[in-house]
Image 1 (cartoon, one colour):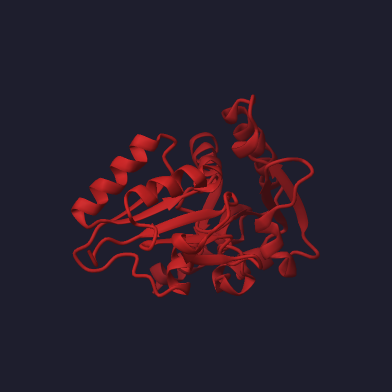
Image 2 (image 1 turned 60 degrees about the vertical axis):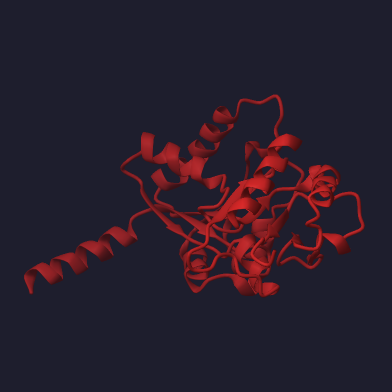
Length: 253
């Protein structure tokens, strides 16, 4: 009984300490926020969110704006679009801002678009804090990824029993992408290609050459008002937005 009471008191004490919680906010639709995400945002005093430039909005912040009206909202530039800058320097500067709030007794939530474990820039923040500030309590709350949301919205099976799923950022080399597709086809592997964006015209040509335009499900801006989910053969534009992915299955060949 003593042990149980001690653990309960200790847990409650620990949960009241200033901390950092990294929260996955899903792909764009506020209705896809988890209960855990909303609870963490409501409890935090400071909400930190990534922006790629001083004058740009944060997609992650837009998703949760209903719950952050009276919060201290801090935009932090992430190095995803900062050419000519040292990424590590920017990461450390971001960490310093976050740590300062925590050391002043304020709990911080760092918003992460999509899920916290899939191509998440927030993992760099977590790594630096764990290595340099081990005394800071950290917590991670997963979110629904654009990958999962896109598959669900089109009844697409990401992976079945006995299958393999490869998730890969779109290769910059045409030969690498061609090899990836051919190997996946030969092994009947499900393929998820992320961040297609500016490479779409070249990717489309490879899909056409491999005769898989009708098998390639494209998903753009998943969960956002301008969402598009259709097969590559139906998509006629010569460009794609940054938030774009392709899902391919070869099991029906």
